[in-house]
Image 1 (tube, helix red, strand yellow):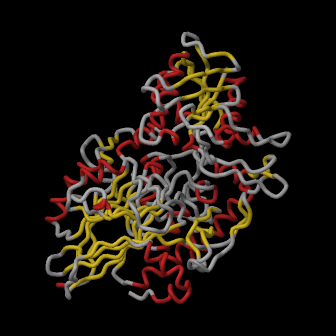
Image 2 (cartoon, rainbow, N blue to C red):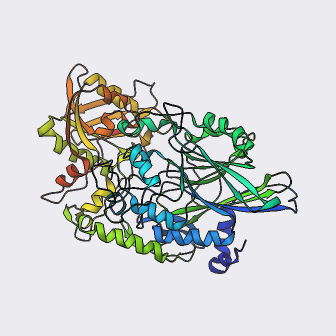
Image 3 (cartoon, rainbow, N blue to C red):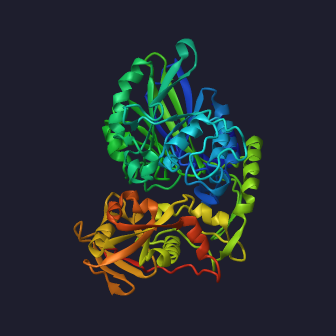
Length: 587
């Protein structure tokens, strides 16, 4: 494969970066008769047709450099350049291709994202949890095409008829009650011809916990089975059909402590670990997602019995994972596998902390003209709604959590929800989940906030709800934050009239300390009206206590409540301090 252009453009510093960013497993002596195959992988695109105004930090000759990344047209060019290096290539996604999308895609039921991926030439996509946001019938429509209406929005508003995805969805562990899967569980693709042909089997799955993090109505009649046991049961069948190499595309992941660039398993943590340990040793590569982190890890360094190449390409099309395989034609087994996460450097932007400019430390890609034309058409169609000014804010509002897991933007949304639910539903407090806050609030130069900005922050279209819970149930609800390996990412963000503290050094069930509403301690025997999104109210994100609430009231959509909150005087970014984490050492 031709790679000399990288050195010509980047110089010695980036050559070191590229070497550091590759994970390699190779035999001491490479056989002469081999086949080279390229897998181009990504995950968690979430309909980001336009650049997400997100920077990736890479190593430069004088230190770390932030470069702008993402955008479907730039993403398309990056894929094209990678494909050109090896005609035996395939483009695959590990889920959440759509769902929780910005307005230019979501307003049109993510049809433009499917069209863009058709142009890019995606081959396979493992279904992720957010692809169920509008329900299984609408997801099937995205695959099969057509204009049948399954949501409150009209399909085929711009392009009629909608042809559907030319790539295949995979869903091995999304099982209907009759035992069939929602989509095919796997696909086998052949690279090369005759005796040089190599067959790779791709298993596609979402996380088994999908039922806890999507609307229950959208997945009625579907069970999500264990990831490892599902994959393991398929491997003999795939081997019988001639699969030489096994790749798992899974919408579940982890994180590492290493920065972007160097391949490392350092600090590898998350729900992907027990899956890796339980997978059949026949699995060669796991392409993961869901956590929105980027990593390249030779898992054999962690568990020598599972020498799996593990990858994830972050989020929003800002990165692509370039995976190269060398397969021995005699044994039909991999003798070398390397991976590198490449930055999709696109166009500069003005960030909350200043300008983010193009940099020569990593390649910049030109926009693909066909994909850019598609994006421009849908951006123009959404412009009237997107550019409408709904109010003003006195500065950017961050979604970056502090040491207690509290974030300003989540606090602001909780305040907006309480304001919308206090009178009609009798809400006395409100909670917002971190996962529902999808972007920073970056206003215009005069502090203007547009509907498009708010929609990017809250793209789900969840109705708000109010339920009655006892004080004891509220304590139990807050205790549920700490279930799982990363409690700081599950902290519930309260409205301004709520204060609580927690101590993770204490035993489970006793971690919540002070807890007040309107300055008064919560009475375990009293009853309180609690406002949330309907997603949380149905027990989403594992907060099952909210399902026990009584006397439900259904309020406005979350986006409408947030828009209403910005009417009138400019909104001040909230200060932190509603949540205290006691067990964090103080300077």
